Image 1 (cartoon, rainbow over the protein chains, first blue to last red):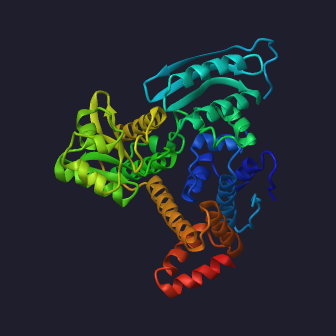
Image 2 (image 1 turned 180 degrees about the vertical axis):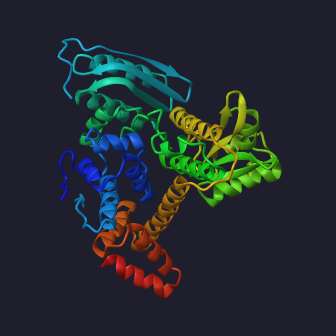
Length: 78
Length: 356
Protein backbone atom coordinates (compact mmCIF):
# COMPACT_ATOMS: atom_id res chain seq x y z
CA UNK A 1 0.00 0.00 0.00
CA UNK A 2 1.35 3.41 -0.98
CA UNK A 3 -0.19 5.99 1.29
CA UNK A 4 0.20 9.73 0.91
CA UNK A 5 3.72 10.08 2.22
CA UNK A 6 6.94 11.46 0.73
CA UNK A 7 8.24 9.41 -2.16
CA UNK A 8 5.14 7.18 -2.32
CA UNK A 9 4.24 7.98 -5.92
CA UNK A 10 7.80 7.55 -7.17
CA UNK A 11 8.11 4.26 -5.26
CA UNK A 12 4.86 3.04 -6.80
CA UNK A 13 6.07 4.02 -10.27
CA UNK A 14 9.24 1.97 -9.84
CA UNK A 15 7.27 -0.95 -8.43
CA UNK A 16 4.87 -0.84 -11.38
CA UNK A 17 7.84 -0.99 -13.74
CA UNK A 18 6.86 2.19 -15.55
CA UNK A 19 9.33 4.71 -16.99
CA UNK A 20 8.52 8.36 -16.27
CA UNK A 21 7.52 8.69 -19.93
CA UNK A 22 5.17 5.67 -19.63
CA UNK A 23 3.52 7.12 -16.55
CA UNK A 24 3.16 10.54 -18.14
CA UNK A 25 1.43 9.04 -21.18
CA UNK A 26 -0.98 7.08 -18.95
CA UNK A 27 -1.65 10.19 -16.87
CA UNK A 28 -2.12 12.25 -20.05
CA UNK A 29 -4.59 9.61 -21.30
CA UNK A 30 -6.67 10.14 -18.16
CA UNK A 31 -6.94 13.85 -18.96
CA UNK A 32 -3.89 15.07 -17.06
CA UNK A 33 -2.38 18.32 -18.30
CA UNK A 34 0.72 18.79 -16.20
CA UNK A 35 3.79 18.80 -18.45
CA UNK A 36 6.37 16.05 -18.10
CA UNK A 37 8.97 17.93 -16.09
CA UNK A 38 6.42 19.12 -13.56
CA UNK A 39 5.16 15.55 -13.21
CA UNK A 40 8.71 14.51 -12.48
CA UNK A 41 8.91 17.25 -9.81
CA UNK A 42 5.66 15.97 -8.27
CA UNK A 43 7.00 12.41 -8.15
CA UNK A 44 10.05 13.68 -6.28
CA UNK A 45 7.99 15.86 -3.92
CA UNK A 46 9.53 19.04 -5.29
CA UNK A 47 6.13 20.27 -6.40
CA UNK A 48 2.76 20.00 -4.70
CA UNK A 49 0.07 18.68 -7.07
CA UNK A 50 -3.52 19.85 -7.07
CA UNK A 51 -5.82 17.34 -5.33
CA UNK A 52 -7.44 16.19 -8.56
CA UNK A 53 -4.08 15.93 -10.25
CA UNK A 54 -2.59 13.76 -7.53
CA UNK A 55 -5.55 11.41 -7.84
CA UNK A 56 -5.06 11.21 -11.63
CA UNK A 57 -1.46 10.13 -11.07
CA UNK A 58 -2.58 7.65 -8.40
CA UNK A 59 -5.24 6.28 -10.73
CA UNK A 60 -2.81 5.95 -13.66
CA UNK A 61 -0.56 3.89 -11.37
CA UNK A 62 -3.45 1.84 -10.00
CA UNK A 63 -4.76 0.98 -13.47
CA UNK A 64 -1.29 -0.30 -14.28
CA UNK A 65 -1.23 -2.38 -11.09
CA UNK A 66 -4.70 -3.74 -11.93
CA UNK A 67 -3.43 -4.85 -15.34
CA UNK A 68 -0.75 -6.79 -13.47
CA UNK A 69 -3.44 -8.55 -11.44
CA UNK A 70 -2.86 -6.50 -8.31
CA UNK A 71 -5.32 -4.39 -6.38
CA UNK A 72 -5.26 -0.58 -6.12
CA UNK A 73 -2.25 -0.06 -3.85
CA UNK A 74 -1.89 3.71 -4.29
CA UNK A 75 -4.11 5.71 -1.95
CA UNK A 76 -6.32 8.56 -3.14
CA UNK A 77 -6.69 11.93 -1.48
CA UNK A 78 -10.48 11.95 -1.78
CA UNK B 1 14.72 24.79 1.14
CA UNK B 2 16.15 27.36 3.55
CA UNK B 3 16.63 31.07 3.07
CA UNK B 4 20.10 32.33 2.42
CA UNK B 5 22.00 33.03 5.61
CA UNK B 6 23.60 36.01 3.97
CA UNK B 7 22.45 39.11 5.88
CA UNK B 8 21.73 41.06 2.72
CA UNK B 9 19.98 38.90 0.15
CA UNK B 10 20.23 40.50 -3.26
CA UNK B 11 17.19 41.14 -5.39
CA UNK B 12 17.33 43.06 -8.63
CA UNK B 13 14.80 43.60 -11.34
CA UNK B 14 13.32 45.90 -13.94
CA UNK B 15 9.95 46.94 -15.36
CA UNK B 16 9.09 46.99 -19.05
CA UNK B 17 5.75 48.14 -20.37
CA UNK B 18 4.22 47.84 -23.84
CA UNK B 19 1.06 49.75 -22.94
CA UNK B 20 -1.22 46.79 -22.19
CA UNK B 21 1.13 44.72 -20.06
CA UNK B 22 3.86 45.73 -17.63
CA UNK B 23 6.40 42.96 -17.09
CA UNK B 24 8.41 42.93 -13.86
CA UNK B 25 11.49 40.74 -14.23
CA UNK B 26 13.00 39.62 -10.94
CA UNK B 27 16.40 38.16 -10.22
CA UNK B 28 17.69 36.92 -6.86
CA UNK B 29 16.14 36.19 -3.47
CA UNK B 30 12.98 37.71 -2.02
CA UNK B 31 13.21 37.68 1.76
CA UNK B 32 12.73 40.15 4.61
CA UNK B 33 15.76 42.17 3.53
CA UNK B 34 14.86 42.47 -0.12
CA UNK B 35 11.09 42.95 0.22
CA UNK B 36 11.52 46.72 -0.13
CA UNK B 37 12.99 46.24 -3.61
CA UNK B 38 9.98 44.12 -4.57
CA UNK B 39 7.56 46.76 -3.25
CA UNK B 40 9.40 49.43 -5.24
CA UNK B 41 9.34 47.41 -8.50
CA UNK B 42 5.65 46.51 -8.15
CA UNK B 43 4.77 50.16 -7.42
CA UNK B 44 6.61 51.15 -10.56
CA UNK B 45 4.68 48.55 -12.58
CA UNK B 46 1.33 49.60 -11.09
CA UNK B 47 2.13 53.23 -11.91
CA UNK B 48 2.46 52.43 -15.63
CA UNK B 49 -1.32 52.03 -15.75
CA UNK B 50 -0.99 48.77 -17.72
CA UNK B 51 -4.04 46.50 -17.68
CA UNK B 52 -1.98 43.52 -16.56
CA UNK B 53 1.11 43.38 -14.38
CA UNK B 54 3.07 40.22 -15.13
CA UNK B 55 5.82 39.17 -12.75
CA UNK B 56 8.49 36.99 -14.36
CA UNK B 57 9.93 34.78 -11.60
CA UNK B 58 12.45 32.90 -13.75
CA UNK B 59 15.44 34.34 -11.91
CA UNK B 60 14.08 34.03 -8.38
CA UNK B 61 15.98 31.49 -6.30
CA UNK B 62 14.17 31.92 -2.99
CA UNK B 63 10.91 33.47 -1.87
CA UNK B 64 9.83 33.86 1.75
CA UNK B 65 6.23 34.19 2.88
CA UNK B 66 6.58 37.95 3.43
CA UNK B 67 6.63 38.34 -0.35
CA UNK B 68 3.10 36.91 -0.48
CA UNK B 69 1.63 39.88 1.36
CA UNK B 70 3.45 42.25 -1.00
CA UNK B 71 2.03 40.43 -4.04
CA UNK B 72 -1.46 40.27 -2.52
CA UNK B 73 -1.39 44.00 -1.71
CA UNK B 74 -0.41 44.81 -5.30
CA UNK B 75 -3.12 42.44 -6.59
CA UNK B 76 -5.77 44.16 -4.45
CA UNK B 77 -4.65 47.60 -5.64
CA UNK B 78 -4.85 46.50 -9.28
CA UNK B 79 -8.12 44.63 -8.84
CA UNK B 80 -9.78 47.76 -7.44
CA UNK B 81 -9.00 49.46 -10.75
CA UNK B 82 -10.22 46.53 -12.88
CA UNK B 83 -6.66 45.43 -13.58
CA UNK B 84 -4.87 42.26 -12.55
CA UNK B 85 -1.58 40.61 -11.67
CA UNK B 86 -0.13 37.41 -13.14
CA UNK B 87 2.86 35.70 -11.58
CA UNK B 88 4.53 33.55 -14.18
CA UNK B 89 7.51 31.26 -14.75
CA UNK B 90 7.48 30.26 -11.10
CA UNK B 91 10.19 27.69 -10.28
CA UNK B 92 8.85 24.45 -8.78
CA UNK B 93 10.19 24.94 -5.26
CA UNK B 94 8.70 28.44 -5.04
CA UNK B 95 5.39 27.31 -6.45
CA UNK B 96 4.91 25.49 -3.20
CA UNK B 97 4.86 28.73 -1.20
CA UNK B 98 1.93 29.95 -3.31
CA UNK B 99 0.20 26.56 -3.17
CA UNK B 100 0.40 26.22 0.57
CA UNK B 101 -0.94 29.72 1.15
CA UNK B 102 -3.86 29.16 -1.23
CA UNK B 103 -3.07 32.41 -3.06
CA UNK B 104 -2.09 30.84 -6.39
CA UNK B 105 -5.49 31.53 -7.97
CA UNK B 106 -5.75 35.17 -6.86
CA UNK B 107 -2.26 35.91 -8.09
CA UNK B 108 -2.55 34.12 -11.44
CA UNK B 109 0.39 31.89 -10.56
CA UNK B 110 1.71 29.60 -13.28
CA UNK B 111 4.71 27.25 -13.18
CA UNK B 112 7.89 27.69 -15.14
CA UNK B 113 7.89 26.27 -18.64
CA UNK B 114 10.83 24.07 -19.18
CA UNK B 115 12.17 24.40 -22.69
CA UNK B 116 12.09 20.63 -23.02
CA UNK B 117 8.38 20.54 -22.21
CA UNK B 118 7.34 17.81 -24.62
CA UNK B 119 10.75 16.46 -25.45
CA UNK B 120 10.73 13.94 -22.66
CA UNK B 121 7.31 12.60 -23.55
CA UNK B 122 8.17 12.42 -27.20
CA UNK B 123 11.60 10.91 -26.66
CA UNK B 124 10.59 7.61 -28.24
CA UNK B 125 9.63 9.43 -31.40
CA UNK B 126 12.62 11.71 -31.56
CA UNK B 127 15.00 8.75 -31.48
CA UNK B 128 13.87 7.61 -34.91
CA UNK B 129 12.55 9.74 -37.77
CA UNK B 130 8.77 9.59 -37.34
CA UNK B 131 6.50 8.44 -40.15
CA UNK B 132 3.74 10.67 -41.47
CA UNK B 133 1.21 8.96 -39.18
CA UNK B 134 3.39 9.30 -36.10
CA UNK B 135 4.01 12.93 -36.99
CA UNK B 136 0.29 13.67 -37.26
CA UNK B 137 -0.42 11.95 -33.95
CA UNK B 138 2.42 13.87 -32.30
CA UNK B 139 1.12 17.14 -33.71
CA UNK B 140 -2.32 16.27 -32.31
CA UNK B 141 -0.62 15.87 -28.95
CA UNK B 142 1.02 19.30 -29.29
CA UNK B 143 -2.40 20.79 -30.11
CA UNK B 144 -4.01 19.11 -27.08
CA UNK B 145 -1.24 20.39 -24.81
CA UNK B 146 -1.48 23.90 -26.30
CA UNK B 147 -5.16 24.13 -25.51
CA UNK B 148 -4.75 22.55 -22.07
CA UNK B 149 -1.92 24.82 -20.98
CA UNK B 150 -2.77 28.20 -22.52
CA UNK B 151 -5.19 30.20 -20.42
CA UNK B 152 -8.08 31.55 -22.48
CA UNK B 153 -7.59 29.15 -25.40
CA UNK B 154 -10.87 27.71 -26.66
CA UNK B 155 -9.26 25.74 -29.43
CA UNK B 156 -6.01 25.10 -31.26
CA UNK B 157 -4.95 23.66 -34.59
CA UNK B 158 -1.95 23.11 -36.83
CA UNK B 159 -2.00 24.08 -40.51
CA UNK B 160 0.46 22.44 -42.90
CA UNK B 161 0.85 22.28 -46.66
CA UNK B 162 -0.17 18.83 -47.87
CA UNK B 163 -0.61 17.83 -51.50
CA UNK B 164 0.06 21.36 -52.74
CA UNK B 165 -2.45 23.10 -50.49
CA UNK B 166 -2.77 24.10 -46.87
CA UNK B 167 -4.65 21.66 -44.66
CA UNK B 168 -5.46 21.27 -40.99
CA UNK B 169 -3.57 18.22 -39.75
CA UNK B 170 -4.57 18.50 -36.08
CA UNK B 171 -7.45 20.34 -34.43
CA UNK B 172 -8.68 20.28 -30.86
CA UNK B 173 -12.38 20.60 -31.77
CA UNK B 174 -14.84 21.05 -34.65
CA UNK B 175 -15.20 24.82 -34.32
CA UNK B 176 -11.46 25.16 -34.83
CA UNK B 177 -11.56 22.89 -37.85
CA UNK B 178 -14.40 24.91 -39.37
CA UNK B 179 -12.49 28.14 -38.67
CA UNK B 180 -9.51 26.78 -40.54
CA UNK B 181 -11.73 25.72 -43.44
CA UNK B 182 -13.23 29.22 -43.55
CA UNK B 183 -9.71 30.47 -44.21
CA UNK B 184 -8.98 27.89 -46.90
CA UNK B 185 -12.36 28.65 -48.56
CA UNK B 186 -11.92 32.42 -48.58
CA UNK B 187 -8.20 32.17 -49.28
CA UNK B 188 -7.47 34.59 -46.45
CA UNK B 189 -6.88 34.71 -42.71
CA UNK B 190 -4.14 34.98 -40.10
CA UNK B 191 -3.34 31.24 -40.12
CA UNK B 192 -2.78 31.23 -43.88
CA UNK B 193 -0.60 34.32 -43.64
CA UNK B 194 1.40 32.96 -40.71
CA UNK B 195 1.91 29.64 -42.52
CA UNK B 196 3.01 31.24 -45.78
CA UNK B 197 4.78 34.41 -44.63
CA UNK B 198 6.46 32.94 -41.57
CA UNK B 199 5.36 35.77 -39.28
CA UNK B 200 3.23 35.78 -36.16
CA UNK B 201 -0.27 37.22 -36.48
CA UNK B 202 -2.02 38.24 -33.29
CA UNK B 203 -5.56 39.57 -33.54
CA UNK B 204 -6.51 40.96 -30.14
CA UNK B 205 -10.09 41.72 -31.14
CA UNK B 206 -11.80 40.61 -34.33
CA UNK B 207 -14.36 43.41 -33.82
CA UNK B 208 -11.79 46.01 -34.84
CA UNK B 209 -9.92 43.92 -37.42
CA UNK B 210 -9.81 45.28 -41.00
CA UNK B 211 -7.58 42.71 -42.65
CA UNK B 212 -9.18 39.54 -44.13
CA UNK B 213 -12.66 41.11 -44.75
CA UNK B 214 -14.23 37.84 -45.91
CA UNK B 215 -12.85 35.64 -43.18
CA UNK B 216 -13.40 37.87 -40.12
CA UNK B 217 -17.25 37.95 -40.24
CA UNK B 218 -17.30 34.14 -40.50
CA UNK B 219 -15.03 33.79 -37.49
CA UNK B 220 -17.14 36.20 -35.44
CA UNK B 221 -20.28 34.29 -36.41
CA UNK B 222 -18.64 31.26 -34.78
CA UNK B 223 -18.17 33.24 -31.57
CA UNK B 224 -14.42 33.74 -31.90
CA UNK B 225 -12.98 37.06 -30.70
CA UNK B 226 -9.21 36.67 -30.72
CA UNK B 227 -6.67 34.62 -32.66
CA UNK B 228 -2.97 33.94 -32.26
CA UNK B 229 -1.22 32.32 -35.23
CA UNK B 230 2.42 31.38 -34.76
CA UNK B 231 4.48 30.16 -37.71
CA UNK B 232 6.25 26.81 -37.68
CA UNK B 233 9.71 27.38 -39.11
CA UNK B 234 12.62 25.39 -40.43
CA UNK B 235 15.38 28.02 -40.34
CA UNK B 236 13.96 30.91 -42.40
CA UNK B 237 11.50 28.69 -44.24
CA UNK B 238 7.86 28.71 -43.07
CA UNK B 239 6.47 25.17 -42.66
CA UNK B 240 2.97 25.88 -41.37
CA UNK B 241 1.25 27.50 -38.42
CA UNK B 242 0.02 26.80 -34.92
CA UNK B 243 -3.32 28.57 -34.44
CA UNK B 244 -4.98 29.33 -31.12
CA UNK B 245 -8.50 30.71 -30.95
CA UNK B 246 -10.41 32.30 -28.08
CA UNK B 247 -13.97 33.45 -27.45
CA UNK B 248 -12.56 36.23 -25.28
CA UNK B 249 -11.26 39.59 -26.46
CA UNK B 250 -7.50 40.11 -25.87
CA UNK B 251 -7.20 36.61 -24.49
CA UNK B 252 -3.50 36.29 -25.26
CA UNK B 253 -0.79 38.35 -23.56
CA UNK B 254 3.00 38.16 -23.48
CA UNK B 255 3.18 34.79 -21.78
CA UNK B 256 0.60 33.14 -23.99
CA UNK B 257 2.74 34.19 -26.94
CA UNK B 258 5.72 32.57 -25.27
CA UNK B 259 3.75 29.36 -24.74
CA UNK B 260 2.69 29.42 -28.39
CA UNK B 261 6.31 29.96 -29.49
CA UNK B 262 7.33 27.03 -27.31
CA UNK B 263 4.75 24.67 -28.77
CA UNK B 264 5.35 25.92 -32.32
CA UNK B 265 9.05 25.18 -31.84
CA UNK B 266 8.18 21.66 -30.67
CA UNK B 267 5.96 21.10 -33.71
CA UNK B 268 8.63 22.51 -36.03
CA UNK B 269 11.29 20.23 -34.63
CA UNK B 270 8.99 17.22 -34.96
CA UNK B 271 8.36 18.14 -38.58
CA UNK B 272 11.94 18.66 -39.54
CA UNK B 273 12.83 15.21 -38.19
CA UNK B 274 9.90 13.49 -39.93
CA UNK B 275 10.51 11.12 -42.80
CA UNK B 276 8.01 11.12 -45.65
CA UNK B 277 7.57 7.34 -45.61
CA UNK B 278 4.50 5.70 -44.16
CA UNK B 279 5.26 3.09 -41.53
CA UNK B 280 3.69 1.65 -38.46
CA UNK B 281 5.18 2.48 -35.12
CA UNK B 282 4.47 1.52 -31.54
CA UNK B 283 4.63 5.17 -30.54
CA UNK B 284 1.80 5.98 -32.93
CA UNK B 285 -0.59 3.54 -31.27
CA UNK B 286 0.33 4.86 -27.83
CA UNK B 287 -0.27 8.50 -28.65
CA UNK B 288 -3.47 7.93 -30.63
CA UNK B 289 -4.76 5.75 -27.86
CA UNK B 290 -3.99 8.38 -25.21
CA UNK B 291 -5.75 11.07 -27.23
CA UNK B 292 -8.84 8.88 -27.75
CA UNK B 293 -8.89 8.06 -24.05
CA UNK B 294 -8.73 11.75 -23.03
CA UNK B 295 -11.58 12.52 -25.39
CA UNK B 296 -14.00 9.91 -24.06
CA UNK B 297 -13.13 10.70 -20.43
CA UNK B 298 -13.65 14.44 -21.00
CA UNK B 299 -16.99 13.68 -22.68
CA UNK B 300 -18.15 11.50 -19.77
CA UNK B 301 -17.07 14.14 -17.24
CA UNK B 302 -18.98 16.81 -19.15
CA UNK B 303 -22.09 14.62 -19.16
CA UNK B 304 -21.93 13.99 -15.42
CA UNK B 305 -21.36 17.71 -14.77
CA UNK B 306 -24.34 18.74 -16.81
CA UNK B 307 -26.69 16.07 -15.54
CA UNK B 308 -25.84 16.26 -11.85
CA UNK B 309 -25.02 19.95 -11.78
CA UNK B 310 -21.60 19.33 -10.22
CA UNK B 311 -18.13 20.78 -10.79
CA UNK B 312 -15.54 19.23 -13.10
CA UNK B 313 -13.54 18.09 -10.06
CA UNK B 314 -16.60 16.38 -8.55
CA UNK B 315 -17.46 14.70 -11.86
CA UNK B 316 -13.87 13.48 -12.29
CA UNK B 317 -13.85 12.21 -8.76
CA UNK B 318 -17.20 10.38 -9.17
CA UNK B 319 -15.97 8.60 -12.30
CA UNK B 320 -12.66 7.68 -10.65
CA UNK B 321 -14.56 6.22 -7.69
CA UNK B 322 -16.65 4.09 -10.04
CA UNK B 323 -13.50 2.87 -11.73
CA UNK B 324 -11.95 1.96 -8.38
CA UNK B 325 -15.01 0.12 -7.15
CA UNK B 326 -15.79 -1.79 -10.33
CA UNK B 327 -12.23 -2.69 -11.30
CA UNK B 328 -12.84 -1.24 -14.75
CA UNK B 329 -10.56 1.44 -16.14
CA UNK B 330 -11.66 5.06 -16.15
CA UNK B 331 -11.78 4.84 -19.92
CA UNK B 332 -14.05 1.77 -19.90
CA UNK B 333 -16.40 3.44 -17.43
CA UNK B 334 -16.46 6.61 -19.54
CA UNK B 335 -17.03 4.71 -22.77
CA UNK B 336 -19.98 2.88 -21.20
CA UNK B 337 -21.46 6.06 -19.82
CA UNK B 338 -21.19 7.86 -23.15
CA UNK B 339 -22.65 4.85 -24.96
CA UNK B 340 -25.48 4.44 -22.48
CA UNK B 341 -26.52 8.07 -22.69
CA UNK B 342 -27.21 7.79 -26.39
CA UNK B 343 -30.76 6.80 -25.50
CA UNK B 344 -32.92 8.46 -22.88
CA UNK B 345 -33.48 5.16 -21.15
CA UNK B 346 -29.75 4.52 -21.11
CA UNK B 347 -29.12 7.95 -19.65
CA UNK B 348 -31.25 7.16 -16.63
CA UNK B 349 -29.39 3.93 -15.95
CA UNK B 350 -26.05 5.70 -16.20
CA UNK B 351 -27.16 8.33 -13.69
CA UNK B 352 -27.98 5.72 -11.11
CA UNK B 353 -24.66 4.01 -11.81
CA UNK B 354 -22.66 7.15 -11.15
CA UNK B 355 -24.59 8.02 -8.02
CA UNK B 356 -24.28 4.56 -6.58
